Length: 462
Image 1 (cartoon, rainbow, N blue to C red):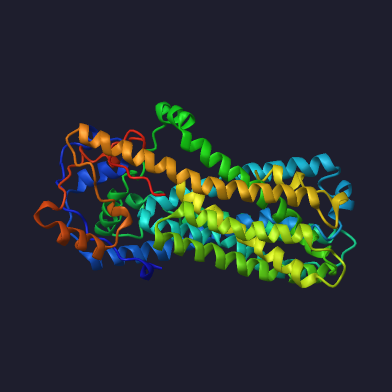
Image 2: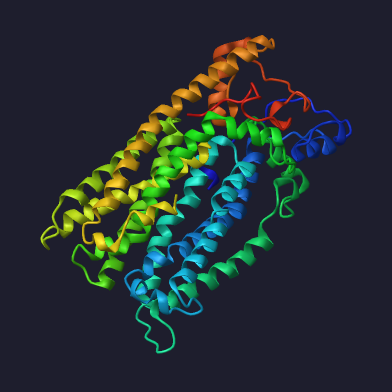
C-alpha cells in the first residue's frame, strides 16, 4: 500500500526537551519531548509507512468487513421468508424482540465507522487518508460479494430445527465475534504504543503526522471542544449530507435483494445478480477516492458521483417491469451501487435507521416511495457536495487573516497534502524566501490540542 504515495521528508523543527508535563496534553508531543529529536530520510519514512499499511490497514479492513457482513445479513435473508416468519424466531418470539435486537446491533455497529476514522487519522497523513479510508469502506462491496456467495450456499441448508435465515444470522454473528477478539489483541492504541515498531520507527510514525495539524491522541475530554462542535456550521452540514446518504443507502442496502427479485428473478438468481453490485461498488469507492486524491477536490468528486445513483434511480422508477427490461433495470440498479463512493469522501471530511422504513413490501414491485426518497437524497447530497467547499474556502481565508494578525505569513503550504517532489518544487520556485520552517513543540498548534477553528495553521481540504 505504501507504493501509492510519496512520503515527505520531515521539516526541520526545534525540539523542546522540557518536562512533558509542562509541554502539551497531546500524547504525541509528550512522546517527542521525552525522546528528543530524530533525523530520518525519505526511505526511512516509506519503510515505516509500509509497516503501518501492512499491520493497521488489514485490521481496519477486517473490522469494517465483518461489521458490514453482520449488518447486511438482514438484506441477505430478506428473500428467505423472514418477513413472514419474524414472529416465530428463536430466541425472538415476536416481532418486537427482533426489532429490539436489531436496535442493539445498530447501536454497537454505529461505533465502527467513527472508530475507523479516528484510527485512520491517527496513523496516516491527510494526503494518504482519503485512499486508506476508501480501502476499508470498500469492504461494503466485498461484503456484498462474499455475503451473497455465503447466503447462496447456506440458503440451501434445510433444517426442521431452525430457519434458513437463522443459519445465516448465526454464521455472521459468530465470525464477527471471533474477529473482534482478534482485533482487540493485535490493534495497538497509538503509534507511540505500537510494540511491533521499534522506538525509532515510533518516532518517525509520530513525527510524520505533525503536518496534519490535528494532533495524534490527547485522551482528555474537552467540554469546550464539544460545545464548539455543536455550534460549528460544518458539523451540521456534514450531519445533513451523511444523514441523506445513509437514508438512501439504508433502504437500498436492506431491500436490494427484494428489488432485484421483483425484476423477475428467482430467490437464488437475485442473490447472484447482487455480485456485480458489490464489484461495481468496490471499484467506484476506490476509484473515486483516487480521483479525489489526485484532483484534491472532494466536493466536486462527490457531486459528480451523486449523478450516477440519480440516473440509476430514475431508471428504476421509469422502466416498466414486464420481463423484457431486466437488463435495463439491472443497469440502473448497478448505477445506484455507486452511492457507496460518496461515504468515504464525507468520512475524510469530517440514517441507516430511517432508510428501510421508506421501503415497504406492499409497494413491490416498484417500491416507488422508497426510490423517490432515495432520488431526493442523492440530489441533496450532490448539491451539498458543491456548497460545502465554498464554506471551507471561507474558513481558509479567515485563518489566513488571523495568521497575518499574529505576524505570520498569510499563505502557508499544507505539507500534509503534498508529495516530496512538490515541496521541493515550491522551495526551488520561491528561492531563499521559502525556507524550511523551524517549529518548536510548544509553538506547533497541531500538538496544542486545539480545535480546527482555533488553530489558524489548520488548512481545510475541500
